[in-house]
Length: 241
Image 1 (cartoon, rainbow, N blue to C red):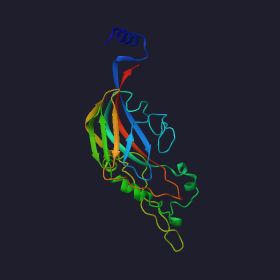
Image 2 (cartoon, one colour; image 1 turned 120 degrees about the vertical axis):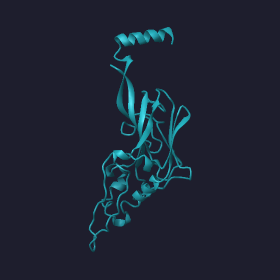
Image 3 (cartoon, one colour; image 1 turned 90 degrees about the vertical axis):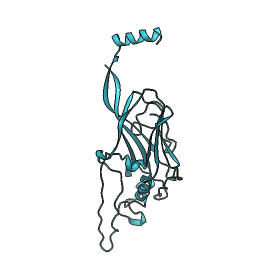
């Protein structure tokens, strides 16, 4: 430690808004969502595009809805990982392409679109594939097969089935919508927890070593907007104020 750094820490400890010598542990979550290329991919990369960066697939700037990462490939605080979660997030109807929104009977299976048009069948197939690889400082710490099944999101709303009349002349009955477990007891528990130092380099990918991931069917000729998320739940180590 240089003399200037020592003086700066002394001044910060006496007059600053934070006291670096007195640390506190708070519950915290780092999350990152990327837009899924419906033509299929060989790899999905997380925690590489920070807040305000442009998602290469959606071409939109990432907001707090997609990520709370402020530095590319780095955590802002020392972070203890206690849980790992993944999320296949089919965006709400109102967030889909205008051509998709124009179809008012997606949920009934009319016009051959199904529930809707095989999209959930494709996401079910997606959930059974992939390998989650997470490295810190070029050293691999996690290698989890089928992460969408074994690291479910453990949060959100559960929709089991939407009923429909099967009477003559009515639309056909719906199939069950697929989704990851919303039960928080099913998430992947990191035992023992892993401490990631501040400014440590992060590499996180979901790879598909057997080829490209499933193709998501189009609706009305338009790609369906689906975000794939990686959520690391745990505790941040912060200086007290």
